[in-house]
Length: 257
Image (spheres, rainbow, N blue to C red):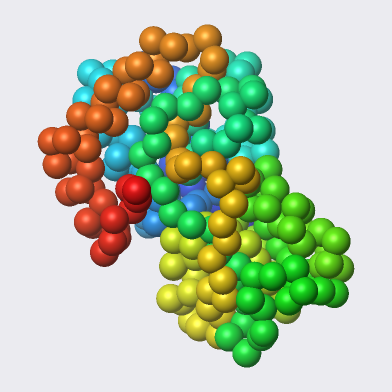
């Protein structure tokens, strides 16, 4: 039943973002699966979340009309480069690996990665602590890169999933032993009934893997658009818009250092 609910949530989420695609001036690509508190759709079909509000504010600051366009996460960079979308606004970390194929705006937030596992477990973020265990990650993410770099030789398997909620569901079901993802994205899960037996066991750091924060993904040829995004990000940061949006979702400085 939980798996069915998750699939239905993804369908509703994707449908909610597709309704106005025909009127787009700038297509903002995001993961087609829900990713609260960054992006979601409420019961009425309204788009919600920190990135949704921030993206809309940034588009307003640019004086542009934007539409949210859902794309499966593992195909989102190809969708950008094939011009199915114009920008990625989807919690994508700025990394050297990704910058080989796309460009980025200045960062608009930065939160650490985390390893989540049962409260009763002895995971501590080290390779030894995951020896013989199954570690889950979302495919095509920096968290997947980290797990493969540090855990592949000791874990029995680094298992990949298409959507963030999917590996959380398998953690609850006992099909995996630990998951690696964004520390803030785990907040809703850990605060739920399903997640009450789990906790963050360790924060994970490697700037070479995780980069220096999250930015808007852009084609390398779109330098003018990159300049517009950077100017708009600076504007919402300076005029208080960013803080007004962020405080609705977080009780700490999500922008980071």
